[in-house]
Length: 424
Image (tube, rainbow, N blue to C red; front, side, top):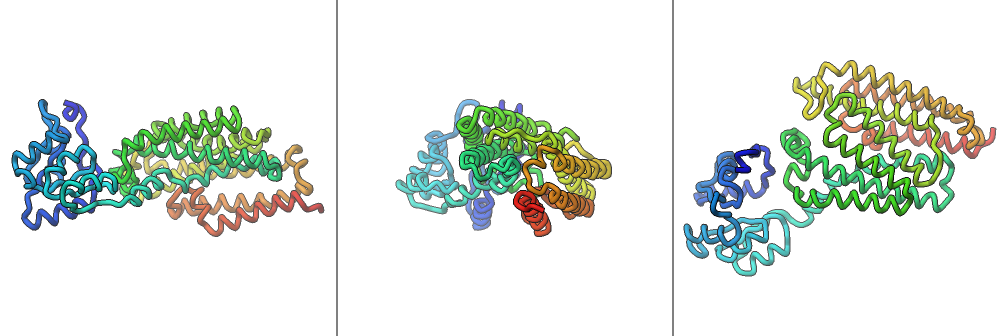
């Protein structure tokens, strides 16, 4: 009944490529393949029809749950004791392996492999433990943690880098945001698993590809969120409150807002700015309103770069944007928004460095003006690349790998250091 009410698109399920290759080879050798599953008959038959390699389907019906002993009995009734080889991936399959001639184990669980082969002959083992670990590292997306480096901006701008307590607080805030970000990435990938399986590149994500367990993901993401909140609370109640806001906003973005035109990019700008607010909460400094305004405009521009790049690729392939609320003909309008906000961010930055409170922090505040053309030139270059269709990833991640961006960033840092230490 559940299958009839909500059928799954079996063509988008995560199939084990190595296992399928082996099964097709065995089929070519003339062997009989049986799909014996505890899932509903309709689901099992749909999978069998899609793959086209099975000679027989055995599955659960209204009276029998074809799992464990029941599955073993059904197979023995047809093929006899030790008359078949069995491929499984769960402890419930141990009852079947005990009565099979050969045990083939999927999933790389060494403990399960040892139990399965303790009572019968060992066959193939598909996947290794380190493959699963690598899949989980990918699912957590540690490369995205670089965005949380914004937490250190208040520490640096307030010149608190020499205070050990402030540095420790900022580092703990950074770790807590990494945990929170990974938590939401897991939830996002779980919620988007169907769309991801239909996407040309996202189908390789761990949950979509089946290299990471969806059930484990449902357990892991709230645990990571709780760990983030606990660590944030240990630093300060205010940081914990900021983390709650971040988790709520980023979860709303992942589940719904990212499909709302314009609201999506505004939300991204807010999420970047929240990281700066979190850094201020951790080291207990008051943020300049000019700095916050600069952050909003600057990251709104970069969020628009990302959408424009996606729409550019969409236009080239004459397709629609998967999972987004934009159309290809929105490209020019979004580009104009992005260029306008990038110019606005530079204007607000000049107001920030002109502010009297900012000037008091530097021995030679006039040197800060040399950073303005660098920031403007970098933004112009980013938009030029986006307009040419050469921006193929998140602009923040692109900047971390791009030599020109790295040199520009180092130059800006050196200018701020010179303004701090030099007296002209």
